[in-house]
Image (tube, rainbow, N blue to C red):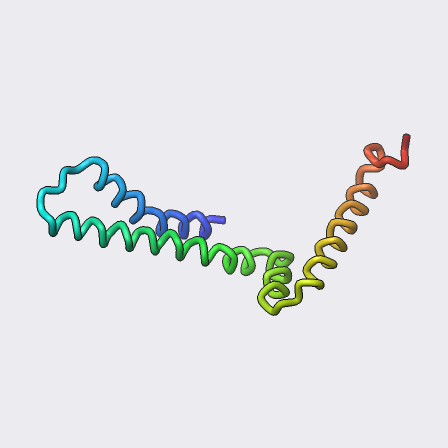
Amino acid sequence: MHRVARILIVCSLPHIITLHIKFYTKLDTLQEKLDLSAAITIGDEMMFLKVALDAFIYAWRLTKYRRSLKMVLTCHANQVASEATEMRTMENFTFQQQNPETSSHHV
């Protein structure tokens, strides 16, 4: 979890800093405005990179997410839907076995 937080901070910090500079400083010259514009663009690119990396970070950390991402990337849409249904069914079955008092069978 710490790696995900570090990636969030590293990718969002340039964006946050440049926006603070934009809103709280007076830029006098055209060069300063162009430099800030370039910095904002780089900060935005870092945020987009973070969003793009999220799927792969979660796939690396979570087995179920990794399987689903692999199926999506290899265009097995029908398998994704059927596996999702199967997973929900198995989770419900497991929950009912572990919590028989909340199951609808025990009225």
